[in-house]
Image (cartoon, rainbow, N blue to C red; front, side):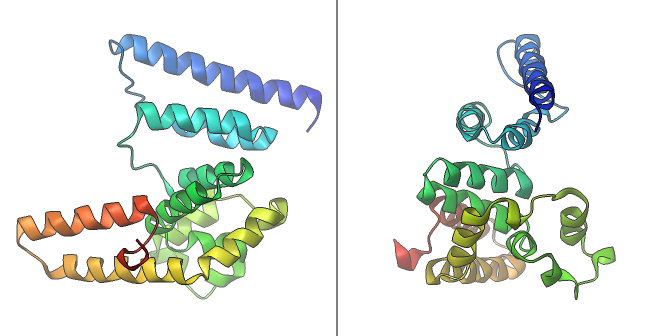
Length: 199
């Protein structure tokens, strides 16, 4: 990246920050951000390889948008940032969030050909990855190696299986209180980053 390109990216970050500040002022001290500007900054920081700045942004995001579901791409960027700033355990939690919003993301990042056998025309998670996910493992060799190893680990596989069991129960459970308990357990498992057998 040239010096002028870096200046343009940093100017865009500053412009977004200014717009979000105006949004907060407009809504009486609370963020609304109907346009989704809060999702744009991570990509810009990663382009700059400014992972300290990205981490500072994600800390801000957690403080002001703690209930935000986010997107698979967003949690992937968060995980990458945490890994790059030597917060590996927290990086696991965010890549888990990404995985359960799009189960193909990790495989696609590690090997785009891994999803070629799945028809994208009737599978929106695949379409989203093909259209919007531009990260290549070659650009992040250490992170890619870590992710490949972690995604094959017993802890990760056990967690995936436990979540799948909960999802199967949710498919047939009609009682509201039981559904609420299952959803709560599912959420906690993902946020904690480990199955009940690992706790």
